[in-house]
Amino acid sequence: WDGPTSNPPSWAVGTFQTDNGDIRMTVNRNGQVTTRIGDNTYNGRYYYGSIYSNGEVATVTQDRNGIRTYNRTTGVYYNWRKR
Figure (cartoon, rainbow, N blue to C red):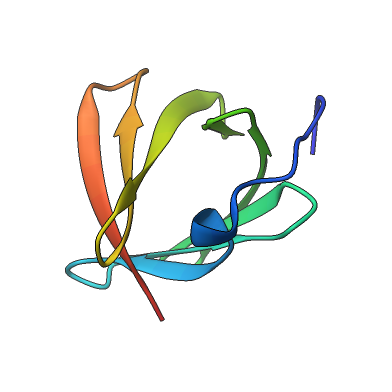
């Protein structure tokens, strides 16, 4: 959890998965983030509207069925739904 964290809004707390189910992410109330892609697990952090993980930064916004992230490093959007 390298760096500071902030408390995410309630709509961003929980376990989410991408629409196709390939990636799973858990955002804790204290700002710690764990992402699982296949057999790999990455630890990160939530900090004032962004997730920092594995050397990348993603902006987090509320979506009606979960959250949406925009990876500012790669330019890719992901839609996540709560599990």
